[in-house]
Length: 76
Image 1 (cartoon, rainbow, N blue to C red):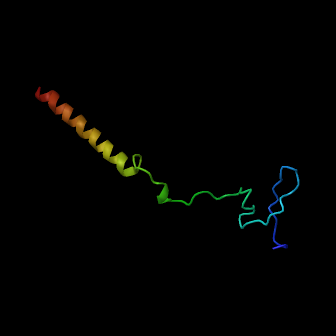
Image 2 (tube, rainbow, N blue to C red; image 1 turned 90 degrees about the horizontal axis):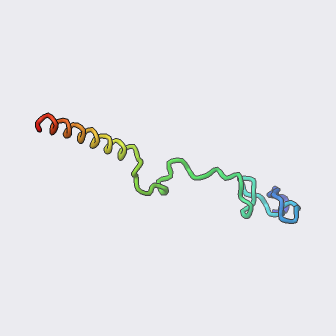
Image 3 (tube, rainbow, N blue to C red; image 1 turned 30 degrees about the vertical axis):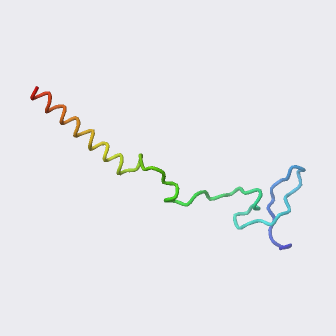
């Protein structure tokens, strides 16, 4: 533990942090260098209003309504 790489972040007293670094290069307190959320994270999916399927469905209904309006104008 004593020979492990150190965090390297500066503390409020301007001295380097003495905590050991995690694999990402920073300590658990100073974070940084985070790769972010994983790609395709299904846990972040809330409602699907802007999913490709929902957009395609709205487009289809919009086209159907336009056709219905044209038929009503021709009949009426």
